[in-house]
Length: 480
Image 1 (cartoon, rainbow, N blue to C red):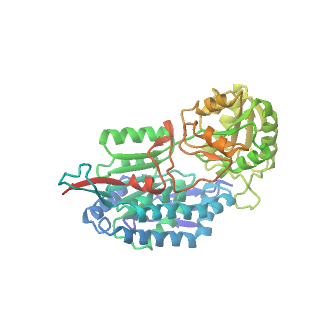
Image 2 (image 1 turned 90 degrees about the vertical axis):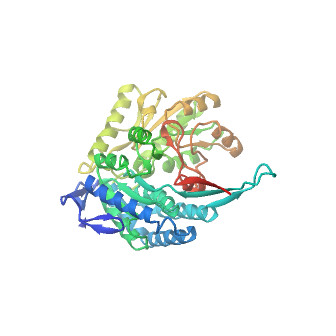
Image 3 (image 1 turned 135 degrees about the vertical axis):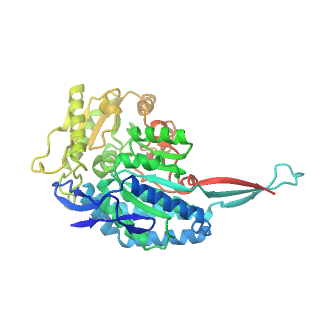
């Protein structure tokens, strides 16, 4: 059994204020696979104080950017060396299928490299040419660290969420308190071990598993300068209100209910094969999952039949089984939430194509749900409007392209999406009309050089690349 009985505060392991350890349960069979200390407000105070002291002392903040980049490259190399262990830990605690956690490791490398390349090319200090040639004044524009960053991440993809925040925050010269979900105490404990080895100055980084109440204590802390949050839209609204009250810098990556638009000329077989990954990645517990499938009326039943065949072909089971595509939900309450939405879809009058609220046979000991497809769904139904966060797809018919765009945009969210067509240029034209932060054409994978984030209730601000790096800096103008 894996045990973390201390907390990683300011770059070293410290005794927790609460000695009681939390049991980490396997989503597969609910057996205890680890135990870990959990942070309380007193531990938050220690971590924030260490971060504030390190920032004010300036040892990391004033380190030249190229040296900070080198430290983060060492961290990324360490993570790559331990990719298999990281994938195993995430599957163990999250229930994410092994294919997903292993496939995600190269993506972490691309994400980190995009940030570090952006940092190498970043305008840390630039002198602007005066707009008036006769002016004797020059403007020197600097990008400086914000200060103490509270990074708060969800449980569904812990390493990706963590590195998408700590790499740009640290390379910009900030000090960081990373608050992680209790469910991820094992993988994030290992993240702490890696960070301990890379040579960061004392106080610059803390990694603390903690509950929601302690998380709110962190983001409300008077010595936190910026909040970087990934999670639900409901929690994001609360954090935004705290940030507004205290005038903290804030970036929010929130929920989604993304649409995949299959155009009339699309190859349905290829589109549905792509949606296996675009709609059902990470057991459906993904904010970018394209769970609203928009199909033209003339080929609607063909799309529904293809989705039924796909979903019924996917193995549900032990995430460590190499044949498993969909593993369990992370917790029993999440399992019941998804099953409740499936029953709601039936009650709302949608046609149950495959699946249902029953627990898969033989998997009753774990947090499993039956992957489900609904047809004859109206976009006003709750199963089409609310983020379910599980392997539940809804298929919605549209009349023409204008109708498809209208339906895709008829959502409080705007995080992701996709367009499928035989004509790539035309697919891009449709993509430009959909109000969402990221949209793929014909199943293209997410790139990390461009900004990632949401429209509407899917968030504020952007991550990845130069834009994401910039959110961890402040502008300073020196006139000479």
